Image (cartoon, rainbow, N blue to C red; front, side, top):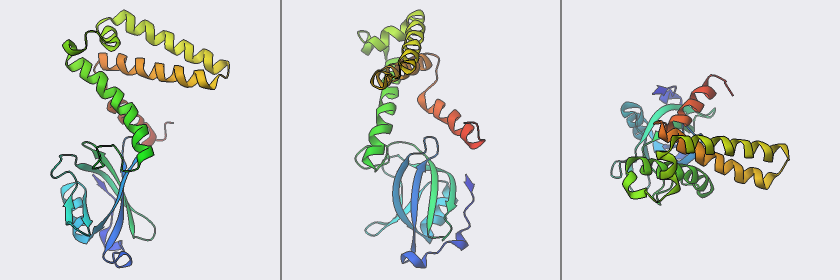
Length: 207
């Protein structure tokens, strides 16, 4: 954890003993949740490397203590006023009690759609006997077919972009993403692995 946070510079008085905590997925950049933390919660977060918050009803609570969906801290950075902290984290599972990636519905829908697709493909890899009739299974067991389809979808997307066809471009883009995820899973690469590379590149300015 890169704890760039100087707890002595936080202004707990402004928020009646608490500061605002904004949890952000360190890999995707998606805002996961907003909560509060008193001094003890911040100290526990720094000491354990996992997010702790303060609730009006529960008091001090460790995110994921019962569900297992902990948030492992990558960095903690205070804002200019010292009354809010940006916590970049790696979540071990869904953030929201409703089972979604983010407590913000629109973000959750977008993030979950891609993540759910990758998880489905991963399940096909892990248990191929349950998916023999699926198209994904056909691609996973036939290297030539999946590479052929990957190339075809890339060409079709390029054509749609060249023609300025936005609707077709979105459709072909979705097809290409699906076939790319299948091809990557076939060689042991997950969506999280891709996100990790993108995050590393962003950190060094390679965009």
